[in-house]
Length: 296
Length: 256
Figure 1 (cartoon, rainbow over the protein chains, first blue to last red):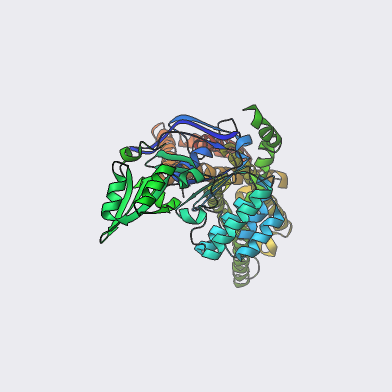
Figure 2: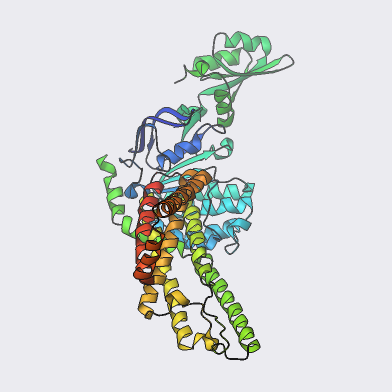
């Protein structure tokens, strides 16, 4: 595995507001990453920094081993699809797809045509007149058909209906299998993309708080439910990520349990369940930082 | 990072010159706003002028010269020059964030856009020159009307007219281009500041010529330089705008 992106001590401030705060991580080649976090956590700024659209205040960014800022060779391998992308005056989708091959050397026009049909995108309608979902479809099609070695999708499917979103996930996976590349996807719909993601980066208040393989992350917490007294007895001094109760029943989310723990829990008549990626991230980003500082 | 260098070196050959041309082409993908719209309006203005000239000619008895009727000062063509500023501002401000999403550097975007403006100036200069040649050959469309070769531009050869049209377009497109760079970098504040700078420069020049009682020599300069001399001097502000716009845009970030 080789690192496509290496970030070291990266910070970006807008006036007094620190959008990205001393962040270090790397991104492996040919992997699908999820860049997750709440609104204003710094996801878009992070993507803009990696694509040379924003200038860092401090720190070091290497993309394909070089700084991306004003670097034509690096940027020529990048496609950045933004939810809020603006298009030239009076552009129509067909204009976008006609000009894309001039910029993306791997552009697959047939694939683009197929996606246009899948998404039922009107090619000849002015972009200004497209619905929110159709506008997102334009970006999604460019992002997929460009087959850029490093593709960023920033909230790419705002307004897309459930069918269209499923088409996006399916086509991405199919095409990824044939043409491996590095994809970084930022989203709120964590559970929907959960199956897609191989690695998860969670950013909160400008810091990377989780940088973990998706499968490891999914196994990193368990829900325990049962009577309040039994649960409390079992939990003891374990770190509790979340707790909810209804009547005499309680359900808590705790960090990874080993085999002995599981046996003990079963003996105590407790029920163990998996925690979805979304719940896990919600729980980890909504509690004070010190409480999950211990997790590896 | 040696393992990744093949990916980069494979794309190096694909880069800058090709991307600059790609940006130039991008500006002409949607020809309507860039080319047809200004020409259609220009055509409509021309037809209106023609109608007015005919009405005047018929009502004054078909002999404009004998009746001392002058139709030689139509400022109608200046429309397309002012429109040039709008074209440039729109082209830069709308295409900039789009191009960056397509992985274009600011440098390549600016150079490609500048090339597009040169091409556009050439195109419009050709159209205006052809119309001016016809205008002169037909004695002002048969009625002594002057729109494409108004008084200041009448006497020179078509080659000189072409050069003047071209330089004037270039001048206005690059003013628009520099203004748009300020807009892209600092939004509305930047655009206001840009026109503020121009206003201060103009005001400074006016103050200087007035206080030093130099207006007669200014007038004399305009006469001695002639139309071609004056338009040749626009190259200076055109180049200043072109270079200044480059450095302003070089640090701009796309905002939506």
